[in-house]
Length: 91
Image 1 (cartoon, one colour):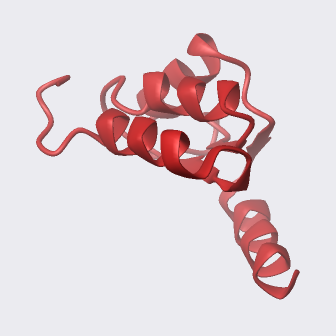
Image 2 (cartoon, rainbow, N blue to C red):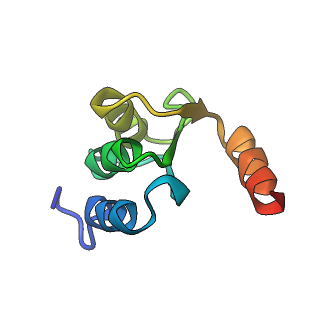
């Protein structure tokens, strides 16, 4: 799928089926559209979707494709993603 093995979309879709609203999907820099469909599925399942700000990504294609496919809950720079993960860990 999208010339990627293993394809993250398949993993995200399976995780969304199992964890639904308890899932947090985070998509970072990347060179193709892999992950965009999976993030959309996570969002439709009620999970939290977080995408790296394409303006600071080394390669903006993956985060931008995810934004185009379905507006994520959060678009954040890496430092704020780190802070979010730390907050989620303590709560």
